[in-house]
Each structure stands twice: as C-alpha cells, then as structure tokens.
Amino acid sequence: MNTTNATHTLIGPFSQILPMTNLPEAGAIQDEQLQVVERAGVLVQDGKVLKTGSYDKLHREALDNKYKLELIEEPMVLLPGLIDAHTHICFAGSRANDYALRVAGKSYLEIARSGGGILDSVRKTREATLVELVDFMKKRCDRHLEEGITTCEVKSGYGLTVEEELKMLEVINLVNKHHTMELIPTCLAAHMLPPEHTDARLYLQEVLTELLPQVQEQGLANRVDIFVEETAFKEAEALEYLLAAKEMGFDVTVHADQFSTSGSKVAAEAGAISADHLEASGDQEIALLHEAGVVATVLPGASLGLGMHYAPARKMLDGGLCLAIATDWNPGSAPMGDLLLQASLLGAAEKLTTAETLAAITTRAARALNLTDRGELAKGKLADMIAFPTDNFKEILYFQGKLKPTKVWKGGKSVKTV
Ligand code: NIG
Ligand code: FE
Image 1 (cartoon, rainbow, N blue to C red):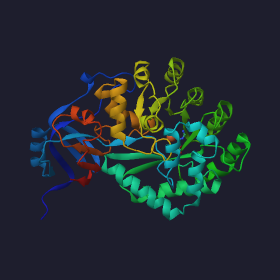
Image 2: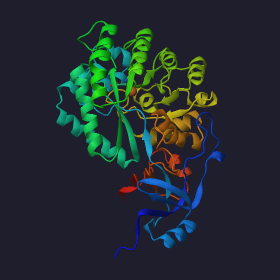
Image 3: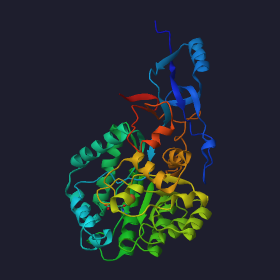
C-alpha cells in the first residue's frame, strides 16, 4: 500500500532558498531587501509552490501528513528557474563571417546595408525545412534548460513573408509542445523590410491584414515585436503598426534604442510591455519609459557580440525602471546565449546589486513577458526551480556564469540532476 500523500512533495534541505518574493516591482533594490531562508525547504503541490520555510518545521509537517520527500544531500542554494525574456533561437546558419568583418572594423549597420546581417539569416532560415529548424532549436533549448532557464521567449523574424513567418511560429510552437523548457512565442515579422518589398507601410499593412489574423486564429503567439532603427522601421510607421496590433489584442514589445533613440518613445506611446536593447538610451528615454510603466529589458549579449557599450542599467534602476536582463540569443549580434554569464558581467560593469541582477533574470523577467505565474517561489506560483552547488548565494554571480545549476525542476518535476 502506498502510504505517501503523493500530491505533496517536500524538497530539501537547501543551505539557502532565495524565494525572490516581496521585492519592489521596479527601481533599485538593496541586497538587504532580498529574503534569504537558511536551511530551508520547499513544499510543492501539483507542480506549484505551496510554501518555502525552515526545513525542520516543514519536515515535521511532511512526516505528519505523509508527504513525499525529495532529499537534497549536498550544500545547495535554491532559486526560481531563470527566465530569458528575449531570444531569436529559431534560425538556421551561422554569421561567423559577419563577426569576422566586425572585428576587422566594419560596423553592424554597414554589414546590414551591404546585404549581410539579418537578411543573411533570413535567406538561410527560409531555405531550412520545418524539421531542420525544429532540430536546430531543440538543441539550443536543451542547452538553455541545462543552464537553468525554465522559460524562454522566442521570436520569429527571419521569415519575413506570411508563409515563412508562419513556418517559424509553427516551429516554435512545435518545439514548445515537446520540450520541457517553456517557450513564449513572439511574432517579429517587423524585424526588417523584406527584400521583396520597398514600402515599409505596405509591408506592415500586409502583416496586419494577412499574417496576424492567422497567428491569432491558430494561437501561434500573443505578442508582437518590431525593430525600430534606421535600417529597419521608422518611428511613425512602427507606432501605427503597434497600435493596430494592440487593438487586435496582442501584447506589444519593441527592439528600441539599440543604435539610435526613438524606439523607446514608440514603446512608451504604444503602451508596450517592454522596450528591449536600450544601449543608446539616455535620461530622457529612461523618463519616458518610466512614465509609461514599460519594462526595460537590456541585452548584454548583444553588447558583447558587437563590442559595444552596455545599456545604462544602473541609471535605469535609479530612474525607477523595472529592469530585466535577457540574452538576445541570435546568430548575428548575440550568438553566445549564456544568460547567467551575461547578467553577471553586466552587473559587475554597471554596479548592480546582487538582488537587482537576480531579480532581472527571475521575477522582473517574468514581468517583461507579462507572466504573473512564475519568477518567484511564492504560494501558487509554478515550481520552476534551480539549485546551485554552493552554500552561499553570493557565489552565483561571483563566478560569473561558471557556477552552473546542477539541479533543475520544471513544474515541480526534477528534469536535471548532476
Ligand atoms: O536583437 N536588433 C535587431 N535584431 C536582433 C539581431 C538579429 C540579428 O542580427 O540576426 C537583435 O540584436
Ligand atoms: Fe533581439
């Protein structure tokens, strides 16, 4: 006879649990505001967190109620699973040639103007079959999950025709169905003006009337993104597009202020959930985003890939913004895709507190995706969790990405144990 109460599991003891709860939604965070529960356990019920607290207390409760026990035998620190709120991991081919050109002195925009850049990935992604793309993506998802990412946003944007964008979104949804890491698809048909088009407004109109209704009917994505930049889409046409997409019921987000400002203004005026990149943002842009309550998602991987300065993350937090950090993993500007490493480096350069950096890849990254059911270990939230082999949470950022989680749970189920 099975005498355990199989719906509840107590996992622990952990040296420390950082539930990432009760933190301010936006603005600077002092490390003293970070709750650290020593010698702690987490009680999980039906894939969700029931509570965290003193292990010894929870252990007695578990014995009384015959809960299942999942014993942690080494010193470990438990955190919510990481959330990567901005990626382009559905693509074919490599852009190592672009990289070589860049380190030899050419700029990202020069390479884009001469037919390389995003359009090169568009050609290669269009040529790839659905099965090939699924396979490429699956490998990237495997690696991300290994590194503790339990939720990952993925954009289309290398198709740029109705048919090819649908193919990409179908691939993302297919992988999502079969992979443990949860994917949040975003339609980025407005990544660049496709080579077949010369009129941006006409192309965006086609996306609005022919692509987005199908995306909606087939439930392929509920988020729409646009790249606002001189080589992509301009302020006025982008705003018009986003307002129309919003009217249809999509959440909107913007690739903003990567090289020049104006994207953040579009994001603020469109009531975007997040504005992403922001390397070129200054005080004025920060104030606009703050006033409109737009999450700032910064992408240090793109700064590293392009050899550019980071977004002014410290200023953003001091200006009251909710700061998320994501990888931007893509074949052009950010091929590395290591979230923890990139967040650690940004934190060191920008003087972010440990609490601010960890919040930016957990609870605040959930906000960037408008997800309220994850990112912290509080009652009712998904039991997406990762554990690092250390007894001091400060070592996680200190080792700058070299200390990897050795245990990962998705919805309370252990999916990685080293
Ligand atoms: O976020 N900036 C625009 N889009 C991507 C780059 C995509 C690419 O270069 O393939 C980005 O950096
Ligand atoms: Fe991007």
